[in-house]
Length: 563
Ligand code: FAD
Image (cartoon, rainbow, N blue to C red; front, top):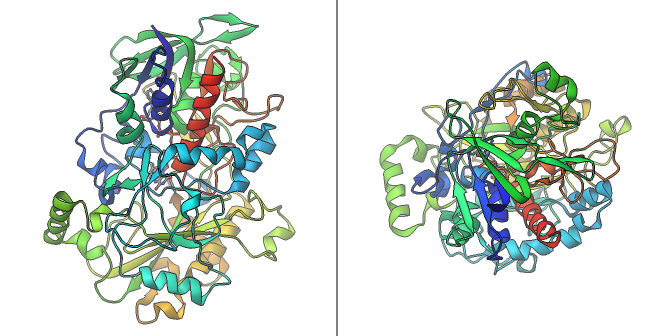
């Protein structure tokens, strides 16, 4: 028998697996639908991360429903389906968000424990900053006091220099009022452009599996099952008038009868922003009208389950560039690639020891932007951002193959404070049928305005003198200049940044909407918590693994202190 059953050995799930088994008397079972990450080279070599998704055995292979804001297009929405979850397949950008994000969550939930000054303490437990793979001097590239050196997960600055790095930094000096240099985005102050911190150590990916799980798996009180897909939680009784759900059904495929296991203390859903609301709905916890239509008996009618889906929007602005210093050649030329892989194999250095970007930053729309005449500022606060600029030294256009000739640079403009909200709903009562994922991208006036302005700003960035002789011309639809043409280009091009949150939102105990209380317990239910990115009520000013790690560390404290 187990004290806790954790559903999903993903980013957050493995943090809990580790922290809850620090007490040798606590028995924990983790159920993971996906496969092992052991020996999967692309989950170890940082630069190969993007080859793990979409359309592989390591991906859930979801597709978004036709997006009305994107000309009715559909496209893949990757999610990791292996030990480590998305932390094993993501692009390893590692940051925590704006202090304003957590202060806003504390305000929304009425729980000061979520405020930045409290939550930031978990950085030191979580993070272990290590030297970059190339051993370069990192002075001025981050603020050491913001970071941990004794935590569990190795984090480092870029491990291989790129030909365009110096031009990016020169642009932050030349155009300092619009694109200031940021010394460190990991300390709650995100504004400005600087050096990326990544979940990479010693030239290898740090996932929740290679760190938290690897550390804990030796303990006899931790059991982990892979190929174990949870199909539902079942009601086991009523406590204080609330149904308790301490039975967990799982199976390796739809032709095999489910096995049922029981948690003595709690069932913890850590199945991610799509998996968690799907399991809640399959268990009869959701919108009664939706569940009834699928002949699922409603046990707790909560229309918020699966709603409020929010994600950053990714918009690639691609430029033709001069020379052969971009990484496009490496990706086309198998001989060059083998040399790079050999270097990584022998020394864990070189381009493949690095993530796919070295510089990025968060920016605001101008104070006098016309949209604010009609729409309140949706950012978390005046120190938080509206959009992000990410600099990639190659052709980065999800779903579109690199052209066979030419050199490119991509400036991604990402919408960071979206106001569009979508949903995750069941397509069927069959747990093996994928849910309907509708992020509702760019369906509000603010969102299309902000991304349009971000596209224009990216072009201003690339027009700095620092790029003279290097940036040649905009590629494809980026040559658009009128607002209408830029909007058409955006709606034809934009897709996901892979940062879904909000589908099991955390709200105040007495709020009229929301799925979990500030202590992450499912509202109206006894014995079940949600600990994953789905509880963030809005998407933070960060690539979402860092905030998820801090959330999971905090959740572990909440769970341990409540028993
Ligand atoms: P996950 O890590 O997805 O964990 C959920 C786990 O539950 C998975 O292992 C899944 O297989 C399992 N599961 C789901 N359903 C079931 C079920 N029914 N039964 C059993 N197990 C189940 N973030 C960054 O910070 N930086 C980046 O560079 C970055 N790049 C990304 C690139 C890609 C391609 C993707 C997909 C994501 C990226 N992200 C990035 C996002 C980030 O990784 C996620 O937001 C974060 O890791 C989510 O953590 P989680 O614990 O909520 O879910």
